[in-house]
Length: 356
Image (cartoon, rainbow, N blue to C red):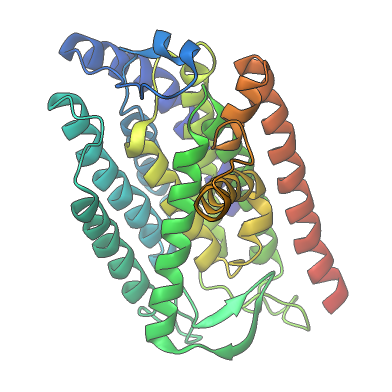
């Protein structure tokens, strides 16, 4: 029954976002909600002015609906871990939506005031972190744990307060990473598909090798509260992003906006925290880390030396200004992200094999 849930949620997520996105495009175009383009970006991006944004609405609704429909169709119970990850995903999406909405309707390129946006992210992030340390099951496992994790929990407990700060850091870092990556048609969407795909595999593996399973409860088994349900959520996310990518790939008919990038960042951080693979996320989502680092290096270098390391940050625009076409940058960056996901899954498996 478990595996069919994963298949159902992935297929329903794909279907809903494949048919839902064009409906959203029509609705947004009718309202005249188009993208506001920065004036200092690559000049060929000005042709994108007016393309509907806030497309994240499509895959947020598709993902949540896919999860709910899967539970109804298979008659299975939702889990606290799955619902919490979806809460973080949709909650961050709501903050992004308010930002996008103000940007477009008020025609202000900066949207929500920085403080208000930050406050929204903090409220959602803290609520997720605090709730994830509650709801212990019969084996006394909560959705998140206060230990650091790589392929599994290790080390000492950091205590609830430091855990909340650490969870917030992960959520904000990933949201920022996806946001910075989302500068070219399909780039962030395609990269996210790969990371969610990796999480489907990881969570299925944790389910099969769970300490709750009497056959696998030996050394190297996984102490994760709801691994199967996390795989169902990851599959819904992967399917919904795939469906959205059909419309978001170059030349994009719609952009995800902050609605999408904040939501995806939240979902990635939530999956990592609840599947006990926090530090592994830096490898699994390597492209987001790389692009974030390019901005940190550029800003740091300019502040310290007055010189720029790249022609423009984030990194994808550096290559555009070097003369690479948008599609070339996107596909090559997808290749990098694909390798990161494969290496991450390989490390995860090696961690399991070494413990046997």
